[in-house]
Length: 392
Image (cartoon, rainbow, N blue to C red; front, side, top):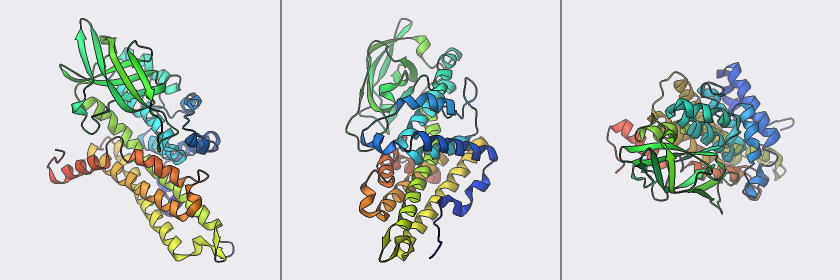
């Protein structure tokens, strides 16, 4: 027992760093250091007080993580694995910060980058990449989440303009966004529109009393006869293919991010088990505690390997939506189980914000649901296996 030291990073057991490039490791370390300096010392307080540190947006822009996997317009143009590793570190600090970066880069910015006009890209992408402007992505409605084709928000032609009416729900960044990507039904199917803050008829209301993602802004958005020029429409987006392509980008970040939340929870449990003495020895020396830690380390390693494999497929241009569903389904499910079990290792101390596992578990309850519920991803995988769509 004398001189024994616990493993600092449980992912070291499988030597995952050895399969990364020097650039990927450097990006991951840079993001981790920023979070250690600017987020970790305050995150417990921010979570307790339901505070999002908006002032960090320009710093995240300077760090280069906003839209980092996009090319041009002030974006870093990194590979998919590097973006995933950044998401891993962000969510290891708190899911709220990974959510902010995901929505900014993979939903708001990606929707403009993929489906927008050259004028829209030049107007918004450099500002969003720098964190000078904040974006949100408006698809979910009060009555339509898993079935976006039923959305009631509608845009109707009025001469050369559009009149937008409806509402959106559970929108990350909604209350602080400078521009909203809004998806609406039209006579020609679903279309996307860019709605700047301050447009007459566009209002927001933040959702309070959350038990999850408290260090993040979540809002309702309302559109009351909002008049938009045709130049506000995303010209290349036709049908649900537009918003669903953006969601796949965000889900990719989530399957890495979940690994970060699980890793941070497990690190906290390992450190605590080494320092907590019962019956004259650390609880990490007891068989039942070691079983918990060993099982969680194996699950974490498997999730991390899956994330890296899918990242390599994405970098090769070979990844398919159902493969992303496999990653999101598995990794979030494993992460929330790990966070809950880690809380049990900490005993009564585990309910305190001094320790991260229960905060991560609470946050992961939201991650389990958004960007496609656990059930929907299960059915996506089921259809890929059997060929039968069982959504209805």
